[in-house]
Structure formats: C-alpha cells, structure tokens
Image (cartoon, rainbow, N blue to C red; front, side, top):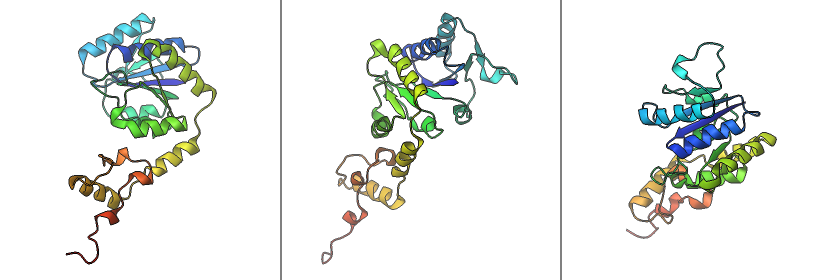
Length: 223
C-alpha cells in the first residue's frame, strides 16, 4: 500500500503527511511526497527534516533506481503524478489548512480511483468536494489541532471499506457538460443574468444549477 501526499504547502501539510504515514506504518508500505512546487528549496528542506524526524530517509524520484523500494519518495520531477497516483491507495491533498491557497482540485487523484483526505478549506472546489464527500471518496479533516489523529482515523476507515466505484462513476457522469450549456452560462454571466453567480463547469454538479439555453432566446413577438 502506497500513500500519496500531494500539493503540500506548509508545515501543517508536511506534519500530517509524514507523521500520519509514520502512524500508519503497519498498514502502509511507502509514502510519495509531491510538494506544490518541486523547486522550492525551503519547503524541500522542511520535508527532509520532517522525514528525518520520523526516522526515515528520502529517495528523490529522479534518482530512484530500478527495483528500489524506498519507504519515502520525494517527487522532484514534473509530469509524473498521473502515473504515480495509479500505485496509491489514498491521497492526502494539501492546501486545505492554508487560507491563502484555499485548497486544491481533488479530481486529478479521484479520476485515478484514489480516495482523498483533505483539510476544511476548499473554496475553489466547493461543490466538487462536497459532492464527493457524500460518495465517500473524499474525507474532510475539520480541526487543525487534531488533524493528525483525524487523518489516521479517516485512512483506516478507507482501508476497512473502500468507497464504492459505482457512486464515483455516477458522480462523474453527472458532471459531464453539454458545450451549449457551458456557452449559455458564460453568456448569461456576462449579461448579468446568472442566477447563481458562477458559471465554470467544475462548479456545476446538478441539472438545476445549470442555465437553460432557452432562457437566452429572444421571446417570440418581440423585436
């Protein structure tokens, strides 16, 4: 079993990822750490110190040798995450405790069939996160003070019972957008007629939240 820690931002994310992994050492084999920016030297130093604190060593992905199976891998390359997700059983998604970042998009890992655990701030992905939480594919940590214990509890719950793939497939099917509806929503927003105040496709999950293109048609009999 491999755990992914993706889009790590600050020390809270790093602590949850590293100490959370250490607390699950009997149930997880490896940890892959993917910081938000792989070239940030200060953040990389924090990660190295945190991994050293739990008594483990880091192997950088760019230096990983064939058949080598380290406990902790640090992603220092670009473009490899989709492939790496396919080897994982859970993802801790960072940014959820940072008001300046407001969370990150969970869909990259969800689309690989990997359940997500994240913090309570997810403004930019509000509807996606809330809808996925109802399916069991996302678990939300509420309080930073007990985030570590809550993370371990959430991970063990996923290990005991993996979320239902059918519920995820149904959620993703609901999010498929008609290009005409998307164009209508953009036009309605520009015209000040958008009832909900947002129009991006990733913000829409239910048909009743979408603008009917017919509402933009010119009424019959009017010039």
